[in-house]
Amino acid sequence: MDSTRAGPRLTYLCVVVGAILAAIVAILLGALAQGASASRAALPLASIHTGSAPFAAAVNPTSGKVYVANFGSNDLTVVDGSSNAVTTVKVGVGPYAVAVNPVTNRIYVADHGSNSVTVIDGDTNVALTVRAGTSPNAVAVNSITNRVYVTNFNSGDVTVIDGDTNVADNIGVGSYPYRIAVNPVANKVYVTNSGGDDVTVIDGATSVTSTVGVGLYPEALAVNPATNKVYVANNDGDSVTVIDGDTNRTVAVRVGAYPEAVAVNPVTNRVYVANYGDNTVTVVDGLDHSTASIAVGRYPEAVAVNPATNKVYVANYGDNTVTVVDGTDNSTWSVSVGDSPGALAIDPVTNKVYVANWGSDSLTVIDGDADAAANVETP
Image 1 (cartoon, rainbow, N blue to C red):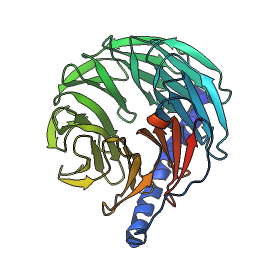
Image 2: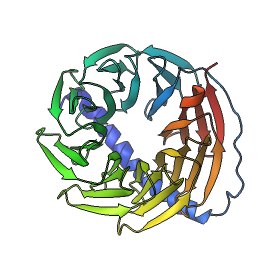
Image 3: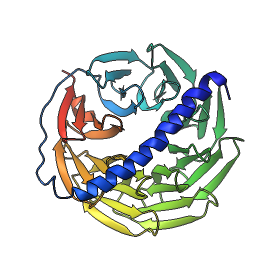
């Protein structure tokens, strides 16, 4: 390993371990305080300008900066999480997804319309372009190996970028790859192939691939690196396929209608599935696969977990709200946001939640401590 990067990577891993330990304490303390949050209100705090048609968001918890990919204006809004100061960085055509490597402070944007990935230096906002396949639509980072993985929907492959050199290569996967997730501990990459009802598993060390059959139209997926399990939301199958990362054996779990998104809390070993078709979230116990159903807002589009607070956030595209779920007892409350919220990002250090609102060209900031909201809007 490069000695100039070994220090930051070790620091990052220590921070992750520390965060998990802190999360366990937080959950125990939270259990003592159940019932104290029966009445909650969303209050306006501040407004700043962002770009047009924000489609995706990501947070660098090390720098406290937030990155919003604006599909309509072909740029990236950079928000300073401490001051709400904004910088705009031009990217490729149709930025569709964004991911951050907090170790190297690099940001990666999948430019769907220009078949490229924009790589941004988080210190200077200087950008460069790396060629990808056709119609890149998702991106994931392995911060330990400093490799970046980009799914290319129309060319049926994944672009792998070396984060040190920005040299890229392509690996063939299945039909119409849609979403991607990384297990940095096992150094495995998982790709949902929406056209083939399967998942491609990429060995990050050798680039050798294998295929695992799942349900109908696999869409979203999430990894629990603590248990080495992968959870695949099958949008047309009303199910989640659980993949054992050691054996690639699968188990099917019934969930709600048209599961659209999935997130994992590695501390509690709970999985949260947003069901777009029946306005629910299915909670899956990672140990025995038992389930519970929670009513949320209309057309839940995205879900994210803060393991440090054991709270779950669900963006409801159809009624302009975020449902907050208390992971200790599955109680819920609602926070008003902008129009057509479709993406979420959480800063576990500051306990702030960022909601990209496609329909109002805005970003809503939720204070996880008070569950108060600040709308970050465009004119």
